[in-house]
Image (cartoon, rainbow, N blue to C red; front, side):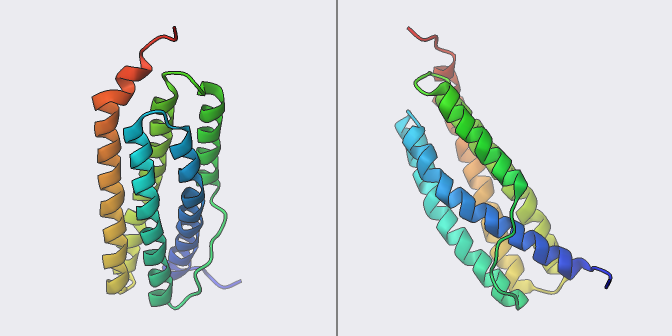
Length: 166
């Protein structure tokens, strides 16, 4: 068996995050539908649009790397999505639902930021300068989304979650 190198690891993680983004794209409408806060719904809808662009950038990175854009099952994102589905089911109709959805969304953002940061670094080491720019653009966008979600949590969602059901 041939020894694996950084190129192999880069490609493997690229497939992982490609799967994750496509899964997130399918999940965001469910989260938007479940959200009670109009601002949280809007945040999920905005992120869905951004995710479409992130998938396009990933496809460009695959092309730069000379590989076909294909996903590889990401058990981490599957687990986070499953937790989000459980929150929707268990907290439906409660004041805490939006806080749970928001926490799930931030778990997704933190996962993505970790992956994109790593991929950006490795792309630089592999001399893929155009890929570095694309991955950095997505990394910055994920960070902006995380900050916006934090602001929404602090401004209203967490306080609403503190209310008791009547």
